[in-house]
Image 1 (cartoon, one colour):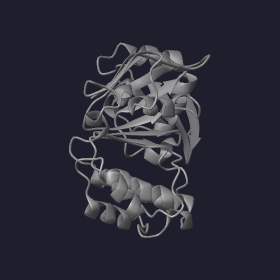
Image 2 (image 1 turned 180 degrees about the vertical axis):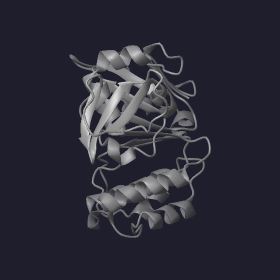
Image 3 (image 1 turned 90 degrees about the vertical axis):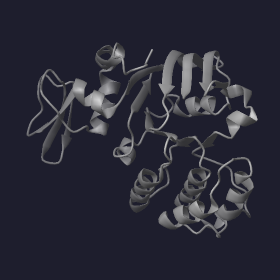
Length: 283
């Protein structure tokens, strides 16, 4: 389990997080959502031990991340949005050289994932487009078979078919018990993948809940017009999606983009609605 306790972080005088408490349980694909610059990458770097908390702690299975001990490092792989790559390296070489640091790499799985993502692992990175590089690195990251996999903006640079491939490959190839955190501001790209959902804003965790809990608390109504009592409304094909407090309205289908915008625009209401929920570890 990943645990942030009273976690704070600042870049000099710029506060990024202020005393948050958050846990990522094993065996789930988490969506870490927020606007650009809100601190998603900072959180992933802290979890992977690349940044030291200003206050509080960040642990992975009781290992303090910033200590970066070998028994911690072999559990986790962080794929940043922009990873410098050697000019003459191929994904094959990259995977073979990286895999010696991990206990359960699977080269055959790497080749299979590369094929499913339609990327050539024998081609040099410098000869690939940004999207092809990203897909090759995703195949590498998944085939290392770490207990924790952190993906920062994994769909950046991918075209529409490649985003579909990414969603399918990730959904079909997650290892039992593996925890994956996908950080993104492109919420539509991961809508069918993630559960639970974590949304951060203004140095705090505004929402941390499963899809089931979200739809218990909020009702996503689709109709021909905006409703005056909606927390948030937006135009969609054929009318509007309205986000309402679910006071006995029943079940509805989550609209992740509408949820994201509701949280950003109605932060106090959403925070109060979910803050005292036992399934939520916001603060």
